[in-house]
Amino acid sequence: MNKALAEFIGTFTLVLFGCGAAVIAGADIGLTGISFAFGLALIGMAYGIGPVSGCHINPAVSLGMVAAGRMSFAEAVPYMVAQVAGAVAAAAVLAAIATGKADYSIAENGLGQNGWGAGYLGEYSMAAAFIFEVVATFLFMVVILGATGSTAPAAIAGLAIGLTLVVIHLVGINVTGVSVNPARSIGPAIFAGAGAVSQLWLFLVAPTLGAIAAGLVFKAGLLSPEAD
Image (tube, rainbow, N blue to C red; front, top):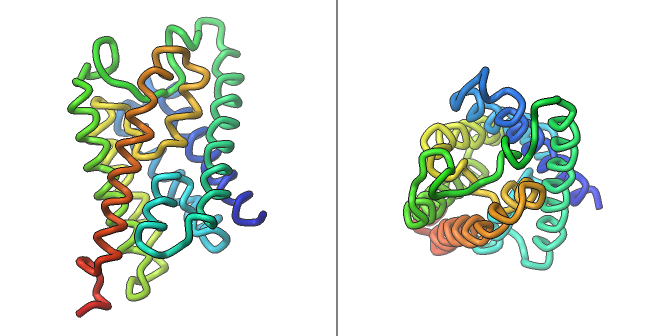
């Protein structure tokens, strides 16, 4: 229960402050500010709940850990349930706050949901969105597994992982809004409407494939210093 609660709180924080930066402050802070909001939220939670659960706050990361042999699938299930629940709860809170502004509507302004194609940010194609999400999540998972390995300096793991998430957002916000995290995508999509829900499959499949691929690379010892 402690681990599940930690994952709920961590994912809630990531979605509330990351998507909240886009919805509430995006016009003032721009893409750079939004990118740092996601990364700094992750850094804070890495040190806040990392000692309890490892701070996955992302179902793709939990599945990547399973693929790498660092946890069992049975252990990952309550993590993933808590992560999705935290993301949905955060999206509900964000919607309640945002709709308190007279000229805001979810239909017009969105809720930080992910997407692609005509009418969405840079209007990139589905293929471009899929490639970005797979590759970005793969690289993100490589950093996570490397930074949390037995030979890595544990004190700076959260900083390395959080800053990587910043860089991913700096590059990818215009492509997909950046998921690399199925829970982060599920929460806002539920409230954003049919369009966001219809595109949700990509943000479940692509990050999962990228994270599992990275996990298998580490499982095979291809990037493991212990194998030398």
